[in-house]
Image (cartoon, rainbow, N blue to C red; front, side, top):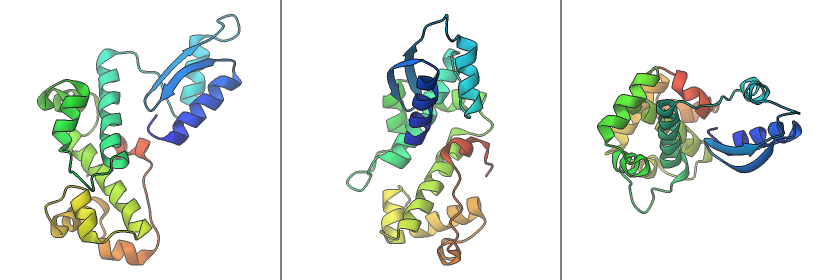
Length: 185
């Protein structure tokens, strides 16, 4: 689960089937159910049907926690007052060295952690451009870029279009967060 809508869908679909939700948050759900009415396979099927899955392997759980931490950092934290270094945040959040985190992520995913972070940053930048609330300089600062030029260069590399052309186009193609892992740089 990568967004609040995901939580809502999981809660709704599981409750429809009689599953009791004890705790649910991004990337985690604690549930109980009457096994005479529904079983684990049925619950897993409901989740898969809705684009989710159950993660039970320790390393894969950690990879999901890494993804969630990146989403929290890039999409939910307000870096306006203080920039949180991505590596420091992940190290503290996961209680592992950045090297371990990066290696584990690359082992289980089709792209590197660095590329995943960049894709998330670009999606957040698209959102900020869409709101037209900030200047490009402010966006660069909030997204931890050294300069507007560096942000612009990376934006064009990832999207194939300049920031200016993106703004002018008026068509804001955003990629759902859960699909970012399948994107290539």
